[in-house]
Length: 286
Image (cartoon, rainbow, N blue to C red; front, side, top):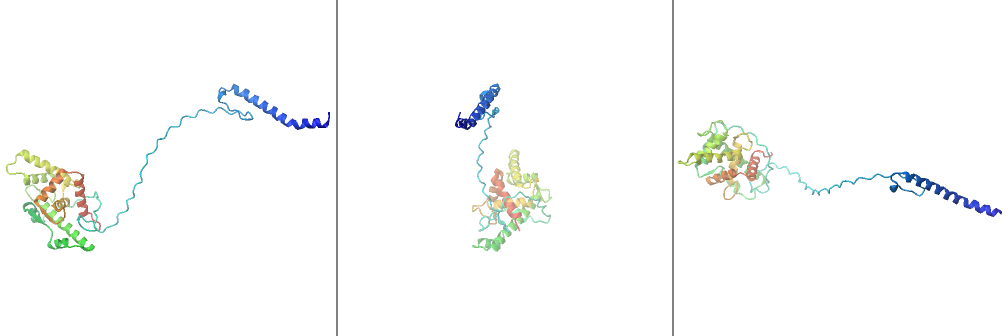
């Protein structure tokens, strides 16, 4: 044989060996795979490399779509104001936030005059502010200083009226002269003022039940007694119960009755108004 023949054999030898090797590997892989219990799921790569059976992947639990939470609007920090007033018509004055701080005002002094409180009960109309205050109230375009003076003086006047009114009730036949007004004192006084001469016991008990509701609303500190600060909040409500809805320093009998009915009917609006009055008068920033 010529040298060319052998040269051709040598050139074809690598391909022959590779094909033979691939057939051997494939046959071996096929034999092993047939013995495997999960033959149907076996995988045969090109060179017959055995790939183990892949376990079943459990179904992934569906995660519900999270509800969209709207962007919460940022409430800017309230600017510090040297004084927050309850007076609604004051230009540039904003109501103070409703706080939950209602401290004991302390008892009314024994020397406290009852004249103004008695006038509030017996007279058809009670004016508890000064003429200077009324002149300032009627002035237009108040300066910031005048604005502060107007409301500061109003709070002083309403406080003096409340002290006198508290002392008047406390020193009446219904009171025990301890400088506060208890629930029983308030119920007895309320019934004595609104009951008629020929009222039956049933009608008196009904009035006392009304007084119980009113007392609960007025007792902002929930201490079981009324102090002059809590009555100041109520009297400010009565002052604003007039036809003009304005704190004008004058309380009429019909204003008192209207305010009592409003408090008796209750509701969150009335409670918030009493708290707002209290905070504007006594929890002012200074």
